[in-house]
Image 1 (cartoon, helix red, strand yellow):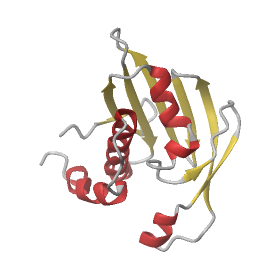
Image 2 (tube, one colour; image 1 turned 45 degrees about the vertical axis):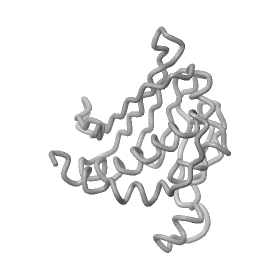
Image 3 (cartoon, one colour; image 1 turned 180 degrees about the vertical axis):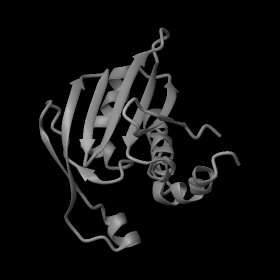
Image 4 (cartoon, helix red, strand yellow; image 1 turned 90 degrees about the vertical axis):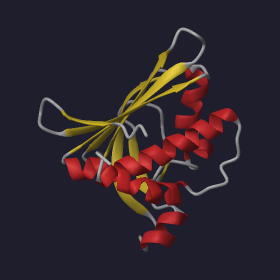
Length: 168
């Protein structure tokens, strides 16, 4: 199982990195990571992306977060759009974390999608790993036109042990 990689950045932060190959072109994958209706199926909070650098972001709880974790209804954190290069790069700040998506054509009509989630500590990175992994499985299904008839939250819970103990 590819659980991503964890490394240190130049400033001592921790970067969790996932990379997946898709047979679809970058423009099609871009839509899945930016369209609110598609994003809502896999992103761990509700957010209305304004695809302009400097745009403020407000992350709010999803119904599933309210149900599972008894989180309050409404805003849970803030962010900012850092970089937007359509069908190539999307980078946002979520509180102090940075989420960087990059799409690179693979030369055969498909592309590579890389997500790098930079955070302050390694435990935090691994804690997010299972959720991003489950999210990527939803993205794969969306792009393949398969129904998402499972809960990404349940799938993340199944994967959590691999992220707590990455050597297993």
